[in-house]
Image 1 (tube, rainbow, N blue to C red):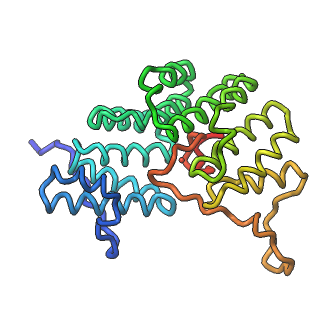
Image 2 (cartoon, helix red, strand yellow):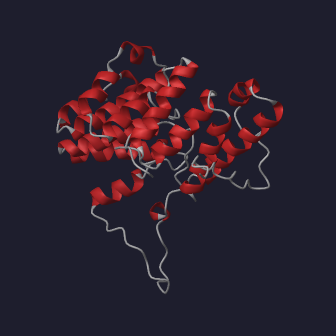
Length: 274
């Protein structure tokens, strides 16, 4: 009788230029629970997963899964796999990994992602229940802002457009300038206003989002053009006219950033939601 055990997937090939030291110091600290050789290998696969996420999500997922197979009790490895799955729209699997990472680390910083996974699965009441849990009240300012953005998206999905707007009228909306989360908060508020039919006010907030967006995280400039009635079309190669630089494809970088407020394969604007 043959061996019917599932074969372990071969180790993904690592890019030659990866050292593993590209990882954040806090993540490398978690890997110290492993043997030195194993820690170095896991670190390299986590870096590879992050670097490949945009150009080859399937390969990125292979690297993250391999890292977890070697470091299943390291919170950062489970979180990385969860982020890979989340970014590719595998919300049920991502939620499982986030729960495991949360249990291992004791940290609640993944709650915004978990709420967005529930949203992506269409479980809106469950998403709101998690967003209103006692643990959610203890989030840092940045995580709390991300949670507000996700909850606004949940309300919009439920057809509660006014509640989606009101939910983003938080103190951070007025004090935001160029903080890392400012552009996303402005953008989400503008999107919620547009959904409510407040086009002029929405445009003003898209302008704020565009001004605050130093890393090309949102497509606020395109949204302004859409409101103004411009058609965004690809020019044929023979066209000699200059292209407005705002219409260039955005470089939406990815891994480990703030949770997308639109659960989708593209953290859209990382497209996660809204």
